[in-house]
Length: 49
Image (cartoon, rainbow, N blue to C red; front, top):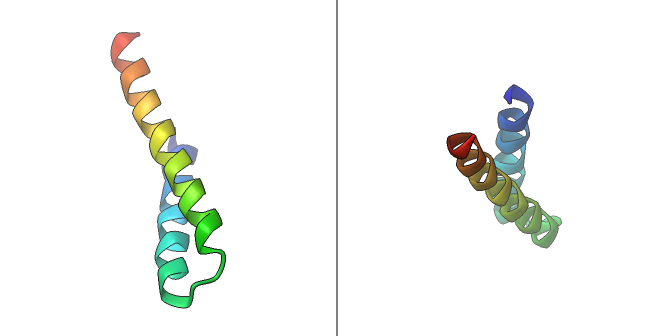
């Protein structure tokens, strides 16, 4: 679980950098959306288990 939060932190930092320097912004946004979907999935699966 700690690895997931580390990945989320890195993605958020890259997302902010994508806005500031506009490098690979589209890819970073896609990865951020995937990370959010993963978080929501883990939260709901954790509650139902």
